[in-house]
Amino acid sequence: MKRREFLQTLGPAGIVFPALINGLTFKAFAESPLVSALTQAPTETDHVLVIIQLNGGNDGLNTVIPFDQYDKLANARSNIILPQNKLLKLNGTSFTGLHPSMTGLQTLFNEEKLQIIQSVGYPQPNFSHFRATDIWMSASDSNKYVNSGWTGRYLAEEYDGFPTGYPNAVMPDPLAIQIGSFVSPAMQGPSVNMGMAISDPVNFYNLINGIQGASPNTRGGKELTYIRQVAQQTTQYGTAIKNAAAKVTKQFSGYPTGNSLADQLKIVARLIAGGLKTRIYMVSLGGFDTHAQQVIANATDTGAHARLLQRVSEGIKAFMDDLNYLNAHKRVIGMTFSEFGRRIKSNSSGGTDHGAAAPLFVFGHYAKPDVLGKSPEIPLITSASDNVPMQFDFRSVYASILKQWFCVPDLTLENVMLKNFQNLQVIKSSAPCMSSNPDIIPAIETTLALTNYPNPFQQSTTLSYQTEGGYALIQIFSTEGKLIKTLLDKEVTPGNHKITFENEGYSPGIYYARLQSNNQQVTRTMILGR
Image (tube, rainbow, N blue to C red; front, side, top):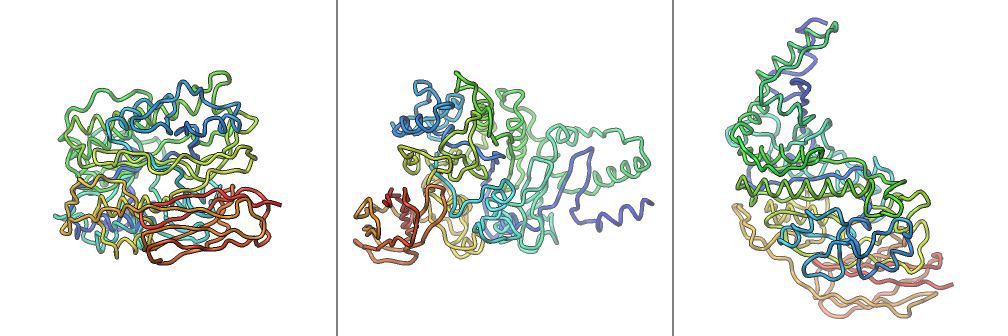
């Protein structure tokens, strides 16, 4: 292939196109709706969101441990249960502790820089890694397929017409950056991808130091060298990244070694402090698919999962310390997610199988420091198929961050998130919105009550609930996390209400009723008898 033909296959000059710079891959996130909404500039803000993906399905019950459910958890997980006396305690709560390897996150919580959101999931969970990841990235219902991501839709709302006319004087920098070899589907906009990927931390430092790797001794080696040279000359975003990185000559010295997550976060901290206007960064850590040998026998606070959680905890703590060192800590909110949790009951291989809901961390100077939600309900006797019942829809977390951190108006928020979701208070009310419409409406504090009678029941049971009015949702879930029935989904008046749940041939056993109203939710355990 001739050089001209080779170049023509890449795309027209002046457009941000996939390019190899010394092995460093840049990919445009043109089709991510969330990314395009974040990068247009109707909302002026210097706020940044850092998303940490824990690939494989993190075991939430081995990460955030319910002290008040410990005995029942020990019955369900006798071969992997953590020693109770080694669990890390958290200020202000006697019900929740952390894995012993997570001292960094314990410190952040006690410093009021970490929020723990209990039992995050979605109705009708999917236990395929690929499909579950797609659901979390797109923020779609589990029975619907959406060809855009939640951050991409947001950025598409903010940066109209991207990529045409970008970079420009208003937005000279990438809209979103992923540290990794692929572009996250979360950054896919309605029509184009909204961000770029930096394939490898080593190649990032080669880029900013101007190191050009040797070309392979192959028939295409000369063409590859030529493309690298052209890419370095024409990729304006690459120049912006180099310029931002060059402004930071010294960083926090306490980053752990041998920790790939920490390596990625160190790059993110440098780019943020260097002044990039990029609003969204995504990093990842794999290995959480712990079906076997999750722990070391007779030393269950050690092993594969302990090492992973230590990397997460140490990486986030060092990142936060670095942001503080670089005086960029007030600009950043971070969150973790995994495509699903694990089952309540451990398996015979010393591991856990694919499950449903799991805890999620929100961290940062302006993160609201508390434990949102109650301890997961653990049955006295568990089966291999039992799952943690969902308390919060993951899309409520997304929507709340967009609203409270990026000041996204309600109408735009509904377009980005595809429907309305419960508003959770994840950001401190003191956080500046830095928007043309800076007032953030605080989440309405409501007092919910949900009971049912009779309980146990056979034919039907009456659910009694109390709310201060507004939108209310009542759903019934099985212990596997599957949505059985939606009893209520509408605006209600303030006061006490009743609604009946009929047994339509359901199998006897435990079911969970979940009431959501405004920014709060409550679950109720119900027993269907024979």
